[in-house]
Length: 600
Figure 1 (tube, rainbow, N blue to C red):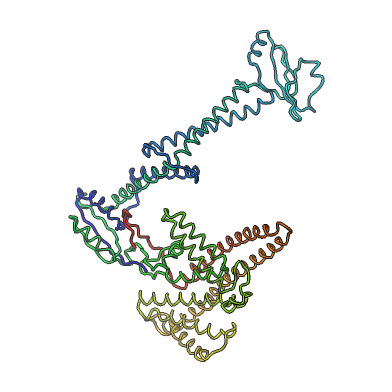
Figure 2: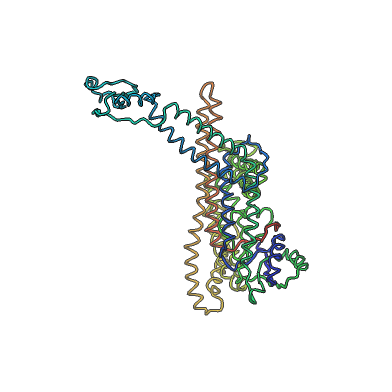
């Protein structure tokens, strides 16, 4: 359900406004009404700081391992961040220096260590040493008769040699001339070692301080976020009476309004409150039972409803759970998903933002376990072959799977139509939802009439379904536009029924994807089992190969099945179900200023 909201207007003297905001932030229950989206210099500066600390945390997380230990530090967050930024800058400089040294070493290695003093001594006698490199095929024997040549090195197809000649007589050899760098190979290697030690020292600094820095930065981000929120709220007031009076508005759930009343009774603040109205666009806070709450993340992925809408979460929850289980279609896969969700909840128990999604995984695992049992599949083995389980397997062949998929789609579409009718009755009056209710009645009776074609046995109820269809048509043709003339209703009714026939059957056929995903996953699992059995027949190592292939194959199939089982039911929910329910949004999420208290 959608929580009812109350809008409060606070009127304060400008001198008391800052202190009131501080207390209101501590209360953490009022959603501030935004009067401007402008950002002042303080907000932008705080935002940049938060971004810088966030980026530092992302960078440091890769240095956290299971063996990491927290090192005590007396540094302030800004000091730690400055040290990390300096280390990062130094690391970039050393990396660049290392790449240059590596290139120089690579170029100089074929020539070995030269005595640079020898070059200077020879130059004093007017002699020069020129270094050349070429392929063996390109080297000409006559060069040795023309010049004094000293072979330096042979590396694969390359020849490296030195030519000693007079400085005033240029050497004319058609080969690549090599210029010695200012440092020797030994010096380059020594410098490379120094750079490597510097890089290692920086890596050690990151490893030693990663956990402590992440904790420091997380606390600082929390503090800066608090500061940012305060500065933003400070901009939302409307100054009046030459800036002497400040007016601010905020929303609070009606259910916890008494806490705000107690707070205001201790404050010298002029205020008044009114009930939320649709045109005021109040923020949306959903409140559901424990089961429906598990599936709130699914609805939130689409959008929140408007304030006057019906919260569809309690209705989509059982359908989504069944659809996921239908697409997975395997008891073993469901058990694996449930255990995986449970283990992840324990591992990430200190991360509350992840808990709803992990709980959802567990719920979807239960859905897959139940639906897998209904269809008689355990890691793609046929459970009907077990005599003690055979009587409890409800769906026994692909025809029944196909029909069951359509039946689930029909039920969800009819549920959506009834919800839409109820919503119209609540919003516009009873008579305005009767035509939609007539559509639901017509579709229901039409489906019952066609049930023998789907394999169901005819019953006495079939005698009365035509009357239900006639009644539904009458409601549609006579009451689709309450208050308008009968002729207009009749004409509009034709258009409405055209939309029903084209839209309903198109929507219903969309649910065939449940059948397709369930069957395809089962077939792939059967193939995995067959191939694993063949590997198991290999002498000696067969059992090992069987187990390895089963684990690898079914792990892949679980991943593929779960992906399809998550996405396609979501598509059916957001398109077919939400459309037939007349859903409209998006609503604004309720975000209390301060966020110190959790509103349950």
